[in-house]
Structure formats: C-alpha cells, structure tokens
Amino acid sequence: MKNLNEFDLMEDLVKLLKKYGPEPFCQLAKTMSEPNFSQSLIYILDQTVQNTKNLDISLPNRNGKQKIEPTIQKVLLTVKQDDIEKHDLLQQILSDLRSGLILPTMKDIRYFSNLFDLSNVDRGSRTKSIVPLVRALAKLSTEEIKEKEQLFSKNKSEINDLEKWSNLILRSSNKGLDGK
Figure (tube, rainbow, N blue to C red):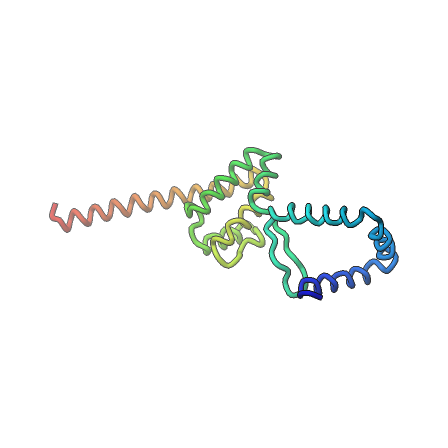
C-alpha cells in the first residue's frame, strides 16, 4: 500500500465483500478482464472527480462516514427551478445574513433556529452557520419563509428605530454640553 488512503480503500472493499458476498466480486473480476474495461473505468472515475469538485465535501471522520453537502448555490438553483419567488426571498436573506443586517450575532442565529426548530444550523460560528440556516429555510414553503422574514424585517426596523433614538439623544446631549 502506498499511503493511508489506499489502505482505507482496501478496508472499504473488504467491508463490501462482507456485505455483498463473493459472487458479485467474481462477476466484477470477469468484467474487469474485458479489453475496454480499464478505459471505461478511467472515464467513470474522471467524471466522478469532475462532478464532485462543485460539491462541498468534508473529509471522512474517524468512523468512515462522510458528509456530502451541496453548495448553497446549488440549493438556490434547485429552488429557482421550482419557485422563483422563494429563490428571491432566500437570496435576499442570504445577502442580509452575510452583510450582518439580520441576525447579526451567533446568539441571534441560535435563538432564531431554536425558535423555529431549524436543526443542524449551529456550526459554532456565525459565518459557518449562515449556509446551513439558509439551507434549512429552503426546505420550508414560501409562505413560511415570508412569515419568518417578517421577523427579520422587524429586527431591521427596530435597529433603525434604535439608531434614530440614539442619534436624537446624542444630539440633545451634545446641544446641552455646547450650551446651545
């Protein structure tokens, strides 16, 4: 074995042998001995690598399980094919989340995801939790997203109101200091 990945691959093959038995492996060995098999296998492997480059693939953990999560662009593209309005809502929410206009802290994201029972959102940091949050929202109907988006909008207006009040108070206190 040249490296650890080859050893892991061999270990997986042994598990498959136990799972399916020797007969499919004998049939595969016959197929592999055919003249065009190596070219076909090379093509399949190459295409697999090319197709998985566009996916977010995390490395396997210690027990060998691997998570494959589609990128948010793929999720949004799939949504767009079914419902353009839903796509536009999710796109705006994603943009507002990334810019910090809505749910500006990790605490806000945790509260929001717990409030609406959106699982697998908390990834430890705000930045890492944005995509899982939008992915969880994508599973909801357009109406449900609109209801939740009203809370975002409410938070935006509350922030704007708070800024206005803060500015008014600061201007008033500055005037008092200047004697004007």
